Length: 443
Image (cartoon, rainbow, N blue to C red; front, side):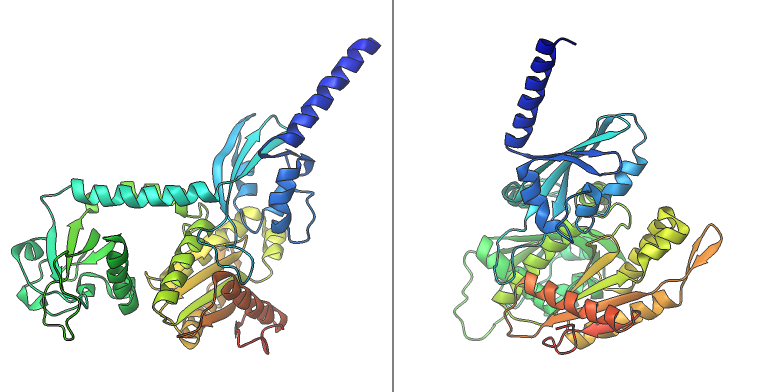
């Protein structure tokens, strides 16, 4: 190669490097094992707060706490090149302690396999886009509730406290409940563990503020059977809310629809966005959205709220001894045990590699500790079978709670639970610790 050709090639390479460093998005080039070869300033800015030790040498390691599935996605991608993931949303914490943010922080990650030796990652902050998408989802759900299956619904009148104010034949047709349902709270249409008295009132207040409140989930018929239902609550325009005593007048309209035939499509859409693909529980994005909403409700109408952080003890040793597929099997079993132990209204999520979080609305610290201990004992007594070999493991847990009347943001609540979890590990693991102001929680 002549000197002129070499100089031209060097200039082109320098121009490419300049482009990468000045690109308006984060760009990271890595080896196939995630070792970082090139990283531009935007990527460094986005990733530095996520790294446990502040060291950006490996993409998988840096994102392990917030995108634990990334390494596995690359390992199972068997094509010589192509898109491994496109626009994967990575949910971060909601902001610095003491600062309340209206929306969570979300990164979008696209990962491209260039060849057998190289990967290219593109990172963007899409927090505002996610907020707009959430608003569109709510609007779409509202329109869908109005425009589909309009002939198959139960029209339920509710008084100002959310009690059924009158009966009609549509209630009987959809739910089977007789006229004796009048005077009961509308939770009569919900399975016992799928809501709380405070959540029922939250929906009335949200309908007051927004003009409507919509949710989908399991519903209950009079015979005890369940169906997948959509429930939309709207305030009536001519109601009188200034009366001192509740005289049974209808103040809200509840439209209850059986959408069981749409459940598969709904579940598929929900899982693609809000579920951890390894364990089937909620992912970080779903957890932070649900937790921010619950704490917003808590600030408006104070009630106890608890958070539990679970961590599989010595999980690295399981991977080192039995292999990563065995470790994945352990995490799947832990996810199933968590889902089976906690209520439907609780939010069970995988928030890190081997770390899970459970948000318990309307639950005290003591109540959360009882259920956490039940889960701990279940795991300790139930080894996972992998290729005929039992793998025994345990979990540690840290619990923090918001007492009624206390104002705490999400980051502070997570920090407290994390301190309690640290104390559980420091005190021998396979145990539950509660945060109580720092005296016994690692401070």
